Figure 1 (cartoon, rainbow, N blue to C red):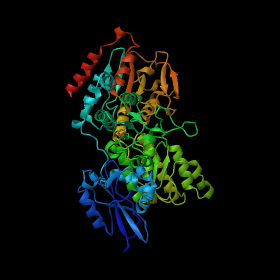
Figure 2 (cartoon, helix red, strand yellow; figure 1 turned 180 degrees about the horizontal axis):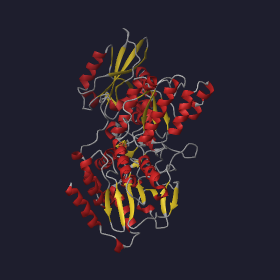
Figure 3 (cartoon, protein in one colour; figure 1 turned 90 degrees about the vertical axis):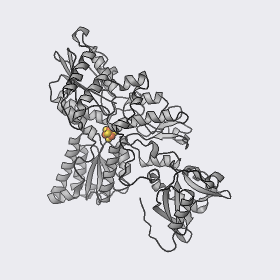
Figure 4 (tube, rainbow, N blue to C red; figure 1 turned 90 degrees about the horizontal axis):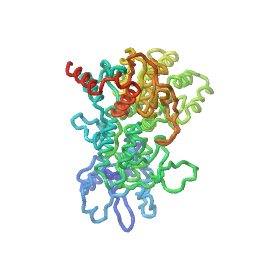
Amino acid sequence: MVSAVVSHASDCVTVLAFNPSNQLIVRRRENLSELAYLSENLATARANLAADFPVHTPPAEYYSVDAGERRMRVYFSQVSPAPLAGVASGELTFVSIDGLEKRPDKLDPLLAAVLASIDPFLIEVPYLHLGENDFIYKFRTEKSRNRGIYQLDDAASALYQSKLCAAIKALARTHERTAAAPVALDFGAVQYLLPSHFGFCLGVKNAIERAYETLAENPDRRVFMLSELIHNPFVNDDLLRRGLRYLQTDKGAPYLPNGDVARDGDGHAGETLWDSLTPEDIVIIPAFGATDDDKRRLVRKGVPVYQYDATCMLVEKVWKAARSLGQEGYTVVIHGKYEHEETKATFSNARRHAHAVIVRNLEETRRLGEIIASPDPAARARFYTEFAGKYTPGFDVNQHLERIAIVNQTTLLMNETLEIIDYLREVYAKLYSEAEATARVGGGGKRDTLCYATQVNQDALSRALSEPLDAAFVIGGKNSSNTYQLYRLCEQRLGRQAFFIQSEANIRSRDAVEHYVFPAKGPRIGHDHDTIEIHPFPTGGNPFRVLLTGGASCPDGIIQQVITRINGLFPAEALRSIDDVLADVERAANER
Ligand code: SF4
């Protein structure tokens, strides 16, 4: 909550009451919309609110505006949308902020003054019922998971179901949250090694289940996803096939109703899907979260936000860390890719509480370190060009690098974040002292903002990579950051015998395997601007030992299809059947 109000005797008070769809209740009088709850003091304003809406959140103060000779203090409350006498008669009515501002001539001047200053605070509206430490959306427990959506029909089953992967995961379950030994699948001529942990994380499972459920529960409403649900084209395509639509690309370019991307100055006329949104529409926020700007736009349109916000709670945990670090006076350094949706959302969230700057990697951090260490004003001024677009407005290089704290995009390599923290501590230790470095480079535990699922997948992969191997295939969306980090670990060990693929289709033949070079380019899903290298299928011994793993957004069904595809490159008579291999894994599980 933000409030810069100094109370004085002649203050008056208004409570803005929003329904769960972020529409504001106004009083309609003589063809004008007025503030519904305006009073001399909060107690009276709240009593009036309670008379109409007995169920409401305690009014919270956000800002103040001039009201003639007086200051008007503005409070927000979220109300339960129970039917009311006033609402029924039309005197009280819920309207979106955009809807009110479309007709400025119909606004009472006090309401117009309140709306003129409301924008910075709209981001709070969907979450008024949550406490500071509440999460928007908590992971479902295993018992409350909706497994039915993974086998809705043949297409869903092929995408999501794999007997082999299910058996491996059952085997690993006894070692949850640790990197247990990898599991070998012995097909004879080819042997696969799968890390004990791979594939879907809880954040992804939650987002997927909610997307399918939302589509099924709302057959008569338009259901949009802000942008890709997760970075996996097969999951996204399956949802599109079932009626979901995107509002914008992963780079934030809006879509037109015909599916084209609207870009500035390219001659596209007419409204975008964003423009066409109405309060009847549903917009799902993906697991990466969303920027404050995007959420504000939804609030303005009176579209529900909280109810369809699938932001992963581990991403939100990073936001909470940034908030408390900001409150402690640190500037937040975000280790992340500034073009990635999650980092954009984290940056947008952090800037409400602190100054922030994004660093992509150690190399970029070194440039920041040189700026921090330099007494030369010209060298320090380089910050503004070197980090253009990656720092908060009003960032003062002479003030805001005094104390810093690091948080990170959840899906990067832990070691890199640790290197960045250690490097920055060294910079401050040289400038001041060891003790000062500890005070000036802050944050909680070093690993505090790393996602456990990413970490467990990375640890399990590292353990598997210590086994004898000929090659590795890492499977996931070509723009999936966590998948790329897994690939990097494999590449460090296996060089060109390591591959980053999206599916079995990338293994075209023994002569041609399509390997993705990260990051993928191109603004549209399915658009052919990807950077692909064609490599021959890797060479190896007999048996051929190949490691397979999938990123946090890779469905099990695709991993099994990759196994089937690779098996197809070996003589059938040299291979054991899937049932025999499955029996091995199940036997191992029973022996534990
Ligand atoms: S990778 Fe981690 S942070 Fe990202 S969605 Fe999965 S659980 Fe959440």
